Image 1 (tube, rainbow, N blue to C red):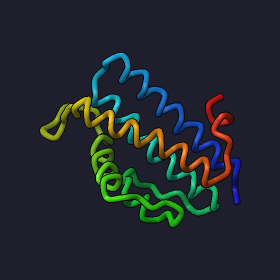
Image 2 (cartoon, rainbow, N blue to C red):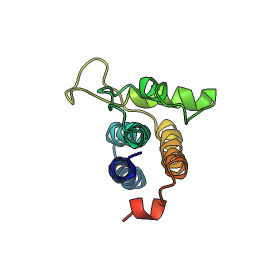
Image 3 (cartoon, one colour):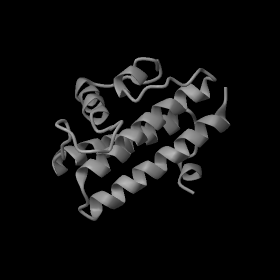
Image 4 (cartoon, rainbow, N blue to C red):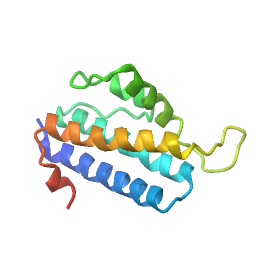
Length: 134
């Protein structure tokens, strides 16, 4: 088990979450918030993989990452949020026909999910969340 590596993933995940929260509270652009949330969820789940000393997959597809983790089970509405948040990740940050601004209501759901997921993963890995928030 590699608690040090998992904590590193969780710390940068927390940074993404806090950035998303600050932008949300400032009524910033939801596409930027969504990008931070996608990264938070991705890094949170990859912390479990790092903890188990497994190879970190080179994917941003949140459902694909989730399918590699036995320690997590989500209800269907949370799985739907994985698909939604995956769409927030942009390989390119240039305008294209698929570029969109998520609604604030949708972003709030993903924000709440990301926050609870980070706490849940800290509990699974027995990592004190206050250590992550430094």
